[in-house]
Every structure is written in C-alpha cells, then in structure tokens.
Image (cartoon, rainbow, N blue to C red; front, side, top):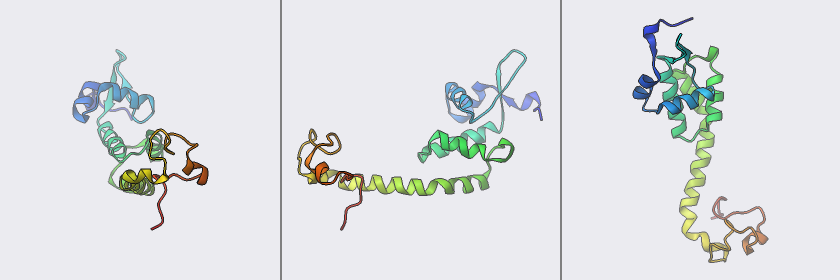
Length: 152
C-alpha cells in the first residue's frame, strides 16, 4: 500500500535520525536490508519504519552478526515487515549460541595470550599462528593453543 508523501523521509533525514551515512543507507539498500521508493524526479524516499529496521541492523551488527545473517533474519519476517520487539527476541535467540562461542574463544585468547610461548618456539616468526611448520604444529596438526580450550 503506497504511503502518503508526508510519511516518507529523504535519505538526509534518515541519515540524521539514524546516525548512519547516506552511503550506508545505499549500501544496505543494495544488500536488500532496506528499501526505498522513488519520486517522480527519481529521488529516493524511505518509509518511516526504515528507522526501526536500521536500529535492528545496527543492534545485530553490534554483537557481531554478519550482514548475510541479518538479511536472512529480516527476510524471514512475514511480508518483509519491520521487526518488532518479539521479532528481536525470537531472532536474537538464533545468534546467542554463536555469540557465546565467540565470547568463549575471545576469553581464551585473552587469558592465554601471555602463554602463547608454551608451544616452545619462543618466537613469533616460528609461532603456530604464523608458521604451520613449527614444532607444536608437527605434534598437534589440528591444534592451536590459542583457539582450543586447554585441559586443566
């Protein structure tokens, strides 16, 4: 259903209200995350509900959700409608396990970073992170001390 012209926002207005650059709006539009209509003069106009979609996108990106997953989540909404609070609760559940895994990995990286020299190389030039032929790599071909949980 077409919206009355007064309910449409210019890219500059959406940019000012969302805090995003106009180029970001165009990028999200190219990726199918948001949509615009065109005036008779071929200028973009956005429905006001695009602000909620942009807030959803920004919140998801803040926790590290890739744009492809955000696009999939938005596409799963009936008739491409704008997400509401219950949509956020449902969709964000899909991302919790991945977020928990990334938090655990980052925590291990942080906690084990000073112990990186445990592989015995004592050198970043020979480290498993940079050189797969180091001694640790020969003994543990699938292992990485920084990315795998260590036995207590």
